[in-house]
Structures are given as C-alpha cells and as structure tokens.
Amino acid sequence: MAKQNPYAPTPADRFTFGLWTVGNPGRDPFGEPTRPRLSPAQIVELLGQVGGVHGVNFHDNDLVPIDATQAEAEQIKRDFRKALRRARLRVPMATTNLFTDPVFKDGAFTSNDADVRAYAIQKTMNGMHLGAEFGAKTYVFWGGREGTDTNVSKDPVQATGWFREAINFLCRYNRDQRFGYRFALEAKPNEPRGHIFAPVTGSMLGFISTLDLPDMVGVNPEFAHEQMAGLNFPQVVAEAIDAGKLFHIDLNDQEAGRFDQDLRFASQSYKHAFFVAKLLIDYRYRGPKHFDSHAYRTADYADVKAFAAGSMRSWKILEAKVYRFNRDRRIQNLLGKIHHDRPQLARLTRRYSKQNAKAILNAEFNRKKLAARPLPYEQLDQLLFDLLMGVR
Ligand code: GLT
Ligand code: MN
Ligand code: MN
Image (cartoon, rainbow, N blue to C red; front, side, top):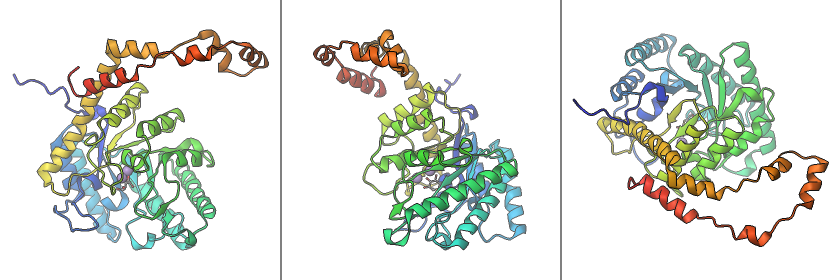
C-alpha cells in the first residue's frame, strides 16, 4: 500500500487561492503574458485538480469583466458556479478591483474627484452583491491606488476623511442588505502609487477604531506587504491577533528591497513563515489562509499547479514543525528558564491601585543581579535552526 502523504492538505485547512493568483498569466511591467489566460471556470478546474483546496476568492472583475453585458455576466456566473460545484470549492472572500481601470488612476475612495469617489462606492456595493451570490463572508479592501504620486496633489487629512466616509457607508450597506460580511482592510506600503495612505497594518488598526461600526471591520495583513516596509510580519500578525482583528490573512513571500514579488509562501523567509504558522496555530486562528502569490513568470500551468500544491505543502510542513517545537523538551526547558515568574509581583503590576503603586515603589530590586540573569537565545535560535532544517 502506498504510504499516505502526511502533508496532504484538506479543505478543513481552509486554504484559499484567488482567481487572480493561480490565474495570473505572467504579465509584468516589462513583459507580456507568458501563459494563456484561463477563464474563471478553468481556474477552478485547475484548483480542483491540485486537490485539498478549500476555496477560491475573486475581485468583481476577475469574474465579470468590467464591460461585460448582463447576458455575458450571467453566462460567466453559471459556468463558474458549475465549476465550483464540480471541484467542491467555496468562495470565502470577495473584493473589488478599484485599481486597474484608468478611472481610478488617482485613487478610488480617496480620489480628488467626487464622481470617482461615488463610483467607487457604487462599484463596491455591486461587488458585495456579487460576492454574496457565491456565499462570501469576508470582504477585503486593498486600497490599491489610494494615495498620491506627489504630496502636492492631495490633502492627506481630507483623504483619510473620505476613506472613512466610504467604509462607514459600506458598513451600513452591509448591515442593511444583511450580507453578514466582515470587512478586512489590507495595507501595502508602496506600489502602485508613489505614496500610499494607511501603508501598514498598524495604520489600519488605528483607523478602524475611528469608524462608526468598528466591530464589523478587521484587517487582512499580507506577508509581503509588511516585509516591503521592513517590518517583522509575525509581529504584525501578533498585533492583529491581540486587537481581535485578524479577520483574514494573505500568505506569500518577498525579498527585502525588491519589487512586488508575491512569491510562493515560505519560498524565501522560512523562519518568519514558521513564526506566522506558530502564531496562527497557538492562537487558534480559524479563518481562511489565502495564498496571495503567483507562480514565477517562467512557469507553465503544470508548474502553476506545483506552485499551488507547494504553497499548501509548505504550510503543512511548517505546521508539523510548530507542533514539534511546542513538544521539544530542550526548547521548552530553555524557554521556561528564560521566563521568570513572580506571582506576587504580577499581582501588583496587573492593575493600578494606590496600594499597588506604593508596594511597587517600596519593592527592592537588585539591578545588577537582574542584569546578570542568563538569556541563552543563541542556543535557542540554533535549536530552532536545527529543527527547521530537519536535523532535530
Ligand atoms: C492585488 C494585491 C493583493 C491584494 C489583492 C486584493 S489584489 O493582487 O497585490 O495584495 O490582496 O485586492
Ligand atoms: Mn501583494
Ligand atoms: Mn494581498
């Protein structure tokens, strides 16, 4: 009997791809597509062949081209629905393309033109209907062109206000229509504009607290986007978890200082990828894990399938490593040594009171002794390396 693959994905893993990710034809700013374009139904079929995928996400225009007639739209949706049924795939997330068409050249919700701003809201409401038709429960907002190429062109305080108005408006539409969406705001620090508003997930988290219906809105952090900003993605994910705002996550990879690469998850930053997996596992994230990446431009569709299967396989391997790490005696002993717990002190620092303040002011601390406590992080980090490289 053939040995079972311990890293085989299943729909319970909630792995998702986008029509725009596996369907990416390999176009870049310097070159034409290297792969033939696939229809939405063909992309679903391809994912079905890969196996173990939970769902496929789309922008309104990934599914229905912006200039499609009503009849064309209906036909595309019928074919897509049939393909979904055949491949047993769901649509957990939908979003709006507010960046490709020239009308959005100066942004959408933050365009200087009131007509464009209203059109962007209209397009999003229609996109929400489209997503709802296929059962989507998360609606992502990636700003795309919300920003400027030169600071002379916009008042960023006014633009932030317009962005807030748009999200507030759409939250209420969501409630009125009973779509039941959770909104997930996705940040990106640069590209396609010179300057982008709310460029990192931390900005989005701050912004959410200023909204009318903040409970409806969370974040969709993307690995590559935070790496582009030089940030530590696991820390970004941790902040979103801590705020109760990790509604969705975009997994991929990126080398520092490069163009927007959207590399296959864990193909580059093994260590960061491991800690992202660890956070999602330890804190029981149950949402979709969306691979927002595309295959190398050199790939043909056989290789695109390998790319999709590889994304999920890498997650499953890292998942197994996380369990191993959490069970590893030496690692856990070292971690235990590093954490000095003092319940009496913890009780005092947990909450402010006049007595607690007094007690802390009166406590004695031996600064030199504290500074001399060992922190064997070199040992710990090497153990991690050994574990990740499979020699432990
Ligand atoms: C685009 C972007 C991604 C976003 C997608 C959702 S579109 O590919 O680079 O990071 O998640 O709009
Ligand atoms: Mn991206
Ligand atoms: Mn993304």
